[in-house]
Image (cartoon, rainbow, N blue to C red):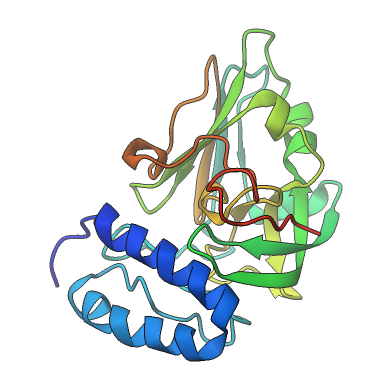
Length: 235
């Protein structure tokens, strides 16, 4: 297997077009999309077009050749930067905090959507309150324990109640293939903002473009307002 190089932007833009058509023309074109992408999957270690088993329509995306597994016992979430109380949290620590549940769509920028997904976990706003945010902080940065993926939100965005540090999804703990055991879920934005395999949260002085944003994607990825194609909003 080759090194985990990111999928080329030309391939991904092709997927965006195919995804948009799939919304209009339904399963027959989506099946064709999977056939067209099969050669990409065979040569690309990210498994770009793979479906998550029993994932309710979710697809597996990774920008690395492999992602280490983290169990409930060995998982740690570090929170630092411009905070009053840097912390390292385990699953049990997150479970002991106030829990928030949401039923919202998951919308990928490539065009596919999974409606009415059940999410649970700690609202990011509550987590920020627990560690204390310094006045100089203006943004929240996220890093994946895959060693490559990053994302960022403004502090105002991060304080929305529909953004979760998610430990539950689809009525069960977040699985590895879904980005678990802990992932970010940003309900009002496209899926690339919802950092999977969440390993670190850092409060910073400014928003830093994330992995895909460094390759041309919008920093503010509001569903229906970012790519000019999708008028749908999360419900």
